[in-house]
Length: 280
Image (tube, rainbow, N blue to C red):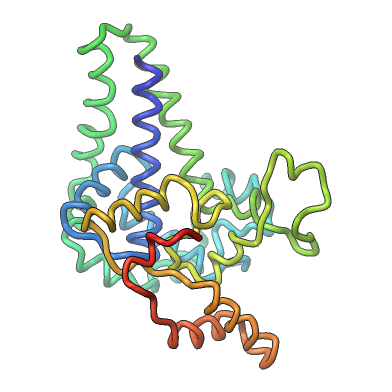
């Protein structure tokens, strides 16, 4: 029972990070009503990673200066740096100034995000610590030691690394410079390396872009579609195949930056109603 509870807590916490902090608040890939935003805020608090506002500010800095010296999670420095070592270091004065210059006005106008920011440590103590640690001992007589190790340490380790992969995953699932697709290597049997992580950094507003190397599949994408069907989410943003083809054709023809070609193609894109119900 404790293991099932562990899986549930990790899944809900990561859902708060992927569909909430990342796809909703960091990139605005869809719009959510108040009830869904409150739920995702609570789920994100259950992850124990820190306030949504702070996480989004760092993540937007990462996107704004991707693969440069001003990127705190620069994948050019390797997976261990992007995933772990950078989190042990303070930002340089230059990075701090760039972070403070990131536009956060949308979150500053979001009452739910700012409520969490103001009362984060109270919510953290109740939602992340008290309720999860109390439940196994209270309801199915789990031992204190097992509860502390499984629901305390193990849960946090899984959520922590799952959340860190949102920034470092491009080192794992993304194609490296000079690497072909599909990869001519046996690693294809254990690791699906694709161009989708790179696509996410060109057009981060696509709700289908998965955090772990996928596109159009995965639990987080399925949940966003389910939220839309239930009327909790709307305005799901994506780039249709025809629009992508037009953008790539313009890029090949004009040699303009790829993100500019994407924006030009998106200006002429009209998504059908309930497009999220179509099979990819």
